[in-house]
Image (cartoon, rainbow, N blue to C red):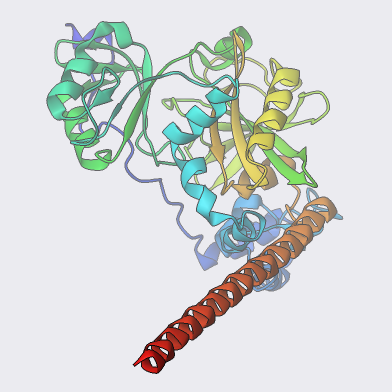
Length: 419
């Protein structure tokens, strides 16, 4: 194989193991941000501190990432409605307090089976690697030899691999083909077969999933090539009725196959919920972003486009939300493809920063606050109901125990009387 025809790049680390961390902004640049926001450094520091210790617990890094210092862009906005990761963690548990259901929702195999059993379109699974468990099966790879043989089989390509319990595309790989001891990635890089097998055995031994790659919609291919660009739809369920709360479009760029916005260079588009039209596009640059109108790789215009299959995408999100109504806050990744909308993943701990960045609007608006208040009431009711059940069971147990004790006493006294 002529490696020069690909990119002559052999990957020493076959996949991302850790998410890239953004670095804190030095205090010396506060004056720069203040100047860009047309305000004083003192007012900026006071605002950062107020939001850091406020209800949204917005860290200084999150504040700067959102560019909340921009007085023109956020004029009239309620900055207290923006939430950071610390507040998000509390919100996840308040909304989805049925934590015993997390295992099914976060396990990619279990959730895929659940959605597929109800007729929802998902990415088909080719095989899973799970070392030394289960019984021999055409779709279960139990050791490195079976994994190696699977990866050498050209019939499986193109395919996408990811850890079963992973998130944010950490550990994922998009592979086009196998040739002469190397896997060829969608980005045109080469991964040594042995390096990839070692990675999966070390980091994915408890479950690594291989899925068939589906072709993105023709419009998406024109924009970013043969890479899925998923729509993140945030749904809530109140009184049994699902509702779409927010939506944005994640678009891969540069060397990235995965569309996660934390990857430098990737794009994020603000969407009109009614039509799916792109209102605004931003591009990840370091720990912040810049606004663009066209894709940097293909020069295709994105602003003003309508997301393909928009009506199917929104309907699929609603149908999926009905199947997880006991976890009523979910972020859905849904891809527009040539065959329609396809459910890629569900997230019961959804990233709020995506929506805050794309919409320039905090999460804690009136609708979401009302939803969280209702969930707090539901949780309290469920707790009282559980206590009543426990108390009732305890009462039944004690009554039954007393009857057994009295019966035993009568039996013993009866034996004495007979003597």
